[in-house]
Length: 80
Image (cartoon, rainbow, N blue to C red; front, top):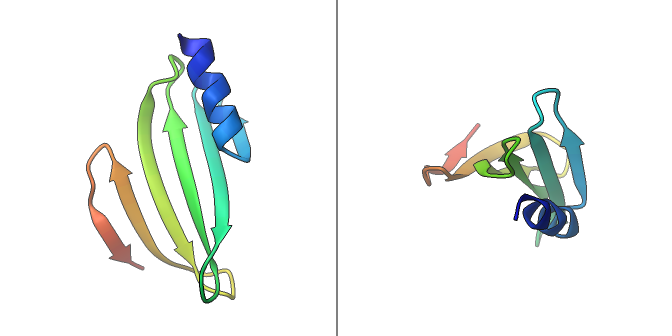
């Protein structure tokens, strides 16, 4: 089951980073409707269980302007 989760994450996310403790950070970006980008970051532990899922919003100059922690608790958008 762990391998299936890892393969699914690798298929859904453009990039991933293997961390020293065996956990992984996955990410992908999409262009905003008007400008800027949204980056989605998923962090899984060594057992492939999701620890956190966050959306970061960047303006057209590449500055982070807000975040939205979606998991484990949905905290809504937070302006930076």
